[in-house]
Image 1: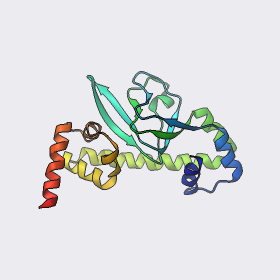
Image 2: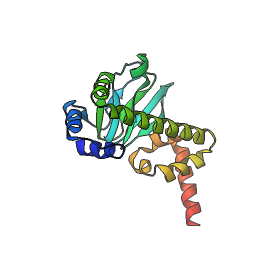
Image 3: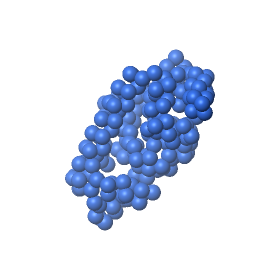
Image 4: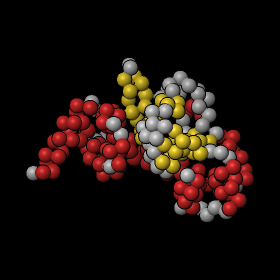
Length: 193
């Protein structure tokens, strides 16, 4: 598990053995079974998550219906808003697959930043990359038809098609599962023609 994280960080900055040992000593690695709810609506969180392996889903429960807004897979991080605001969460986070995560609190991060300032630089770069990606994805979602959203998903995140249950995928695309089935059939029919 730790080698996956070390390899990822090495894409941004080299790590010394002391830095690697400090990361390991924090006991941040956690295995999470499929279906585990990491955060419930109305709960507070003091943890941020980084996916080493697996898939997490962020969703709201509105009028008894789950509305999926994001999936987080390998080498993607998520810090719940409630971690920073100290207000109850308005959404849920759950494991779609058996997952291996790093789980850290703001205090753990502050300790790492104090000992190794380069970690703060890495976190800033990752935060900037995530913010830019989310802005682009949001604009694309708002300006696309359901078919365009699905085609964009096929192009940019094809792994989700196999990894995520169809009803969650449909919710993420802003359509009903039956509409997704029809949409997929229509696209396949066009591809065969």
